[in-house]
Image (cartoon, rainbow over all chains, first blue to last red; front, side, top):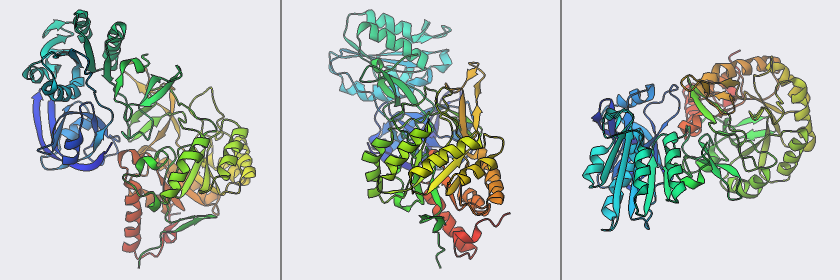
Length: 267
Length: 304
């Protein structure tokens, strides 16, 4: 897998919702090779604090224009620095990195489950998947967040012609409850499904258990603290089932972030 | 005239004084896309153990102000796999290889050393004397001078390779550990192995690391590393020293050299800037040229 370490040029900070932005970066090699589920590591300035780069899932990529984008909300010193990068300045970028979502071609219904800021890689996946679907394949997208204003990607998902169902913890939009409840309902319908999910790890555990109980193929994109992004530091270890039935660790940055649900040891 | 970057640490000759630190550069191969390993002073491998280790449960890392706390638990493929699979590739790439080794017992240190001494292409051994941050497993060799001396002496008897003892400031007095390591036969001292620390998550009301205790590295520890290097330099002026701890720029590296280091290691900064060690080599050459100095050795220890 080819990956690049380069200064990407800031094209735009596009306001998406209160305090939430799509950062569009010009970096043709990354835009060309980015696959849904993959991420980049960003470093806006040579700072010591914050020290680490941060991983960002790729939200969309346009190889023709040489641009890709990531989603961020301003909520930390790091994201504040990122938000202050002027148009035309550069952000040191490493990517594209990690594993990606693989469409399960035997499925008749592809269910994407997005929790909060876990939506961006699924926006990218949905955009690439939708045009490839046959007439007998459905695309369903379940989007959840704590509140209405924290929902990400709902309009984009609708624009793809997908069936979109929304859940909020406080009931301010759609179903009041968790997105996992919506998934439980969807899986009860008699159609062969495959599930692709990204969100908080606790949500993913619920998604994985619902799928494993029914034998539904399920891929999850896991979050982990990630100092290097290239498999060196071994900081982003994820506990998985070893071939011999025991447990060992894989790296969220190289073997992940997308894992098959049955592989992960949920704790 | 181009300044001479070559340095001698006793029997260990390096093409320049800039190495990459154990555990921060994998086995070196992971960085070959961005870094010409043959240009580095040396590649210090991640610590090798006698048998493969799966490492600690996650979370293993936490970011702290200007630093990071880590407890990886010596996750590695073991010394045999390193010798069979990795070392030949490093040699092909022209890297000067220093193997970092970690033992839970003296016998393990000896066995690892014997294996590596029989393999061609190892320039030196670096003893990781810190605990694997797993309280139930492993001796903390750098908490007491007697333990440090035992580990160094055991390895010394098993090899003729140059030995580097890497010490952490977790004991009351690192200088005592340094004396003990030198008495026991180390050729070189490497200062410092990261100090221990903890980090707490106030929201979840628990430790940030699964193993609770970790090692603190990054720019935050640079003044601590420089303090210990300077003190040991005063006590043991004839022992070659390697400075490590928080180096993130050419200036940082020069500071260690001015304080008496013969060479330096770039550590945590590799994670955020894979090309940093190479940049420091260029930066050092430029610095010496700008000051009209003939060699790295001409700035060593001039800040007393």
